[in-house]
Length: 460
Ligand code: EPZ
Image (cartoon, rainbow, N blue to C red):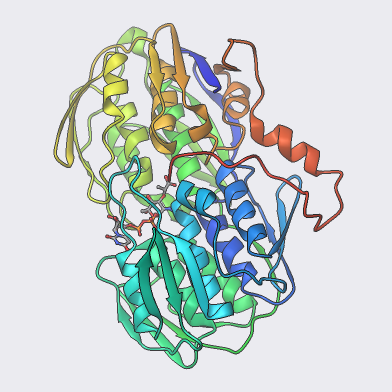
């Protein structure tokens, strides 16, 4: 298992390119597989979750080929297996999207239920109720969801609670159903809009994505299309916080300002200057200077579905607030996502958690310590804390960080950080994603050998 050694205290300065959105690409990959023929997705990040989805789709008979630096070709015309492989699906919750794909295309789906994970219990009951409403017979047997529906029929579905995954899955299923499906209380995340754009380019009839009512008129078949994924608003937010904690001045490149307004407002409230400086560029400038005791102001934040403060930036924000000048209160309303604070405490943070709320008392300094990334965003939070800590922090569980951040140490080092990846023995190592993707470069398009990095345990 690799580790990151982060020597703190370096101010981040420069430009950082932001990748395509991992969570959007996972939905886009499955959407592309709905089509008959080869679709192209651009702006695909080289991360482990994309690799896991690629493995699962190939097992179902979908052809997936990666073309460096950031393009995927996906052809669903040979999709022929209705049972999804157990291991990779258990590893990544988004793989449950293949349930919607299989029901829509083959009228039958056997997909392992994603288990509990580091974010607490994450049921799929809304997905299952939605499939049933569309006319599928759904049963749970031996850890699998078994669903069958020779024809799905459009209907109105009220989703109990705004859910990204349920909205993605039901849009997939409804696109090839007979008649009209109306999803009420649908998720409004930019990733949903991105999926709807690809679907419509493939010949689907989806209206209202980005609002809480989405209307999908089923069509008999979808054709291939080309699409560029939206920028990753969570990666962008993570680098904002990394710059903020180090008193840095960075420009985020290739971002969509409209997608992260709430995090921007919160960071501005804390005293960070954030401005749009070009159509896809955002400047982040932080006044922090720990040696002169210039610190950020505390802020109170509650996570919420889009356009609220994203749960995926809760951990990075808490890391940032550990060094603020006062007490912040952060309430997590989406997941059980505070276990990582024990690791921040090892670094000297003062964080008290009661149920869904963390009370973060800002301290004057953090100190480097051996810590462990428990999930993707918790890992990002530890990296942020480590960038400002005195001395060296050793972060294990880096594979989890690789699930959603491409080239994290290379990007940070290009901004002036001191981050080294080492292997078990402490020898310098390079990130797995770029290495294994490089080997895919020479392979012919659509080769079944074309590989992304190996899938990785634990869920996001
Ligand atoms: C997506 O997860 C993201 N994953 C998560 O990002 C993100 O944290 C989350 O949305 C919220 O924004 C991907 O897009 C691949 P939900 P998802 O369904 O779809 C409850 C990351 O770090 N619920 O919107 O699984 C659920 O427990 C990851 O990149 C049910 O009760 O989240 C949660 O409380 C982690 N039953 C709430 O709804 C269901 O059937 C919202 O979850 C479905 C959800």
